[in-house]
Image (tube, rainbow, N blue to C red; front, side, top):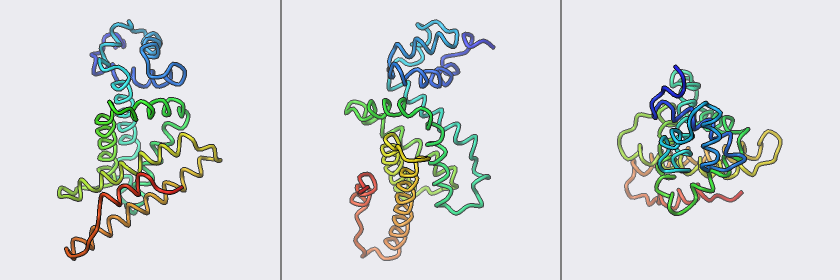
Length: 218
């Protein structure tokens, strides 16, 4: 079936991948979308219907495509034999490797997501990706652990991306070391929650801990 015969929902992931290539040069703009449409043999006006919200919709679709690629490459059964810490590390590393050749595209996307008007959407995307990672890691928590795990991982992932876009070390070794430290923080957080559950008199501040994860010292 030709791309032009696809529905908008079917067309969206194809366009998102192509726009991501164009965004390195033109940013997440209508010009990038028009160029992507032309590359796929689509009428630009039709392509624009797929992203009525403009740049933020394009970025959302791109991030979703990374979520889906991660799930296809690292299914639950492939990770099941690994320690939880290693499952999370591999999932985050897959995402970094997936965009390693598109750092300028990523940098421009992060700049847009950092805008105040896009904060709610950025949080939603971060939560969705963190949820996808925890589910692939085998997490089935339905109590408050479901929320704290995703909040901590979303914070760690966002901080890691910020380091990654500016990492010029060989093989992004600085990012890898940063990620290992942050994952160690997640594991400490999980242990702290277990102690809190066992002893309600212990005083622990999830908000303070999350702040340290999101803005750690380099």
